[in-house]
Length: 273
Image (cartoon, rainbow, N blue to C red; front, side, top):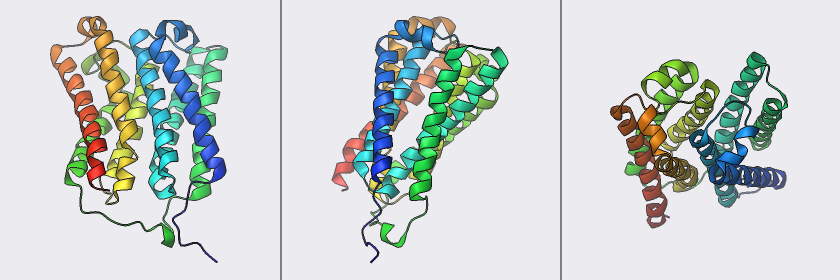
């Protein structure tokens, strides 16, 4: 007899998400707290601020995995698996191109293997559960959450435009609107997160089920918050390398907007559920 309950995340999928979260938690903590110790293990040249940004990405992914596990219902958690697969997939491509073009050693292929394994794991989870809803997956709808809808649509446009330029036109992005000097593959790795976030926030902006919206909020709040803290720690690098004070102001405003908006939504959603 078919179940009338919404499809839950399967046992093996939960195990994968748990392992992925723990791996990213360890990587994120090391990269963010001890950037000087891990620089030599990254496959292309980076400095402390970029390492902390990478750490913020890993920690945000860890929180995203936990949020998916906590949601339990697949139709609420699936967007986070899609975000993870998109980020790791794009980063795999960046890493492979860098490895083939620079003739790098073991480190870059070890990292590429990790990115590919994470990508394939996310794809396997998506394939196991499917993207489209089944009859029992029809969840209750809530009144339109107008603030969330407007916030996510603004964020989608901003991170989509910047992410596309950072990925496809990294030299232009570096010279015109990125606030400190980074290597091209580093900028493209950041772009991978921007574009994955763009897909997620665009999806969230059309949802009526609050559960589908709030599952994204921990990831959406953690990365910009930690990125702002990293910028504060390394303000000297920003002030000396930024193309202009306007560029710095735009980026600080963007990160502050996302961090504050996501945090506000996270705490205000309790009144709606």
